[in-house]
Image (tube, rainbow, N blue to C red; front, top):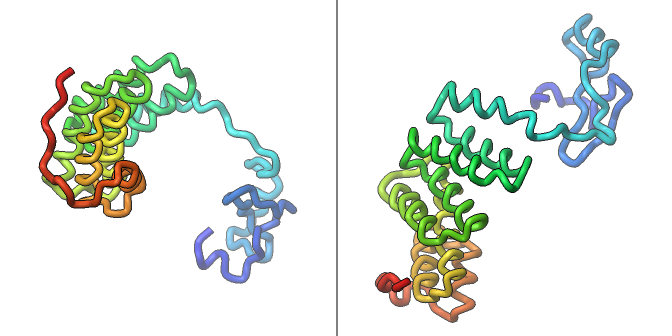
Length: 219
């Protein structure tokens, strides 16, 4: 409901005698005396083309997969379609990692410098594949892109996550020197980031110390 519609309205509209809150969801069927739609509003209250929010359930997320396929066919540069679509693929079946990664790679073909896509692809490599070296190259691309241009607002979270995953993957690889370097780099752009701050505190290294990047480790 718009701000104008809620002026003078009750906490939850109860034209259908439903006045129940579920988390941040509230029924919004206006009472007859506050419904400007007239006969069409009465038709909605009588036909009830909606469900009672009380005790509602969500449908299987797999039903949305064809929609993500169509939306990315329609606009191959629509990054959120690839990111969320890959998540839905994995939420339906954790064994479908190859399919999710292939979907993200398709997105990267059309948007190779997308901060969010590079970070998300690296995240799956780290968490699902333990492919740290491969993930590092995608994280570096995301970070380089973010530092060489002004990221769009919707890409800023992916930019910050790139630093976080860079810190975490070096921690998992047992290289404290690289972990500290990337934690300090992350704090230059995101001074309040919790993961970067914890990395420094755990190693008792002050921010700003040893800004020179250490040598790459030998595998």
